[in-house]
Length: 293
Image (cartoon, rainbow, N blue to C red):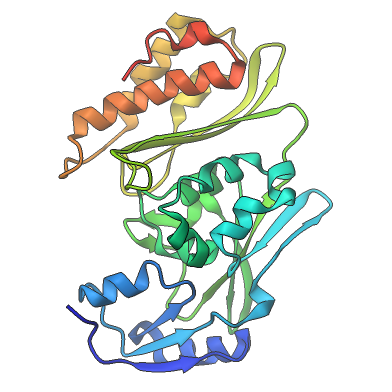
């Protein structure tokens, strides 16, 4: 199957792109890396009247560290994030996670902004942005606004981004010296969509979590910032405490059945990830005794 007929415009600047989006609204789609948009168009899942190509806008590309903030331009490709020494030093969770995004061919073309705007609930990067307490930078004709990552993702392929706006970048806090991170996903094969995954960031002091963000993906319609993490903060972590957190996690999850896995399988795998994540973040193998899959 091939895409329906469409008009094409290559934006010459962010201002020009916003003018085109302002004129055409939800009849237009933004093309950055094209790794999600083009397959959807070929399958007739979306049929925009106009494609606004922003791929040549150098102002939306690059990684910079300024003080306590890492800024990543929306057109920065996955492979550039993967190889970035600035990301490895200041947001290592992202370096680890992005190696799991699809395959090299996709990572060579796909962009951070395109991935986040697409908001696939099985995608690694939205969960990482929530775990890292990132800010999504959005620009419209009226100016720029910033949205906390946990408020940006609204549902399956749904975000806080309007049809007249562009996602222009993300801002991440620099990881502190006593921070710890964890990333793992279950998938049938490397590069397949995740069945269940966890991105986590913690502050650890004397074998105790003082801050902990556990964000599960592929187990609901958006990244889930788990309330279960509150059960693990400022307490000595024992198997009993971990078991209580798993009960809370099971209650807040709402996974769906699909061709890859049942809801009960996803709920089980999320609990396994909770045990593995807590064990790895604290370097406590004993906590993972019950976290088997």
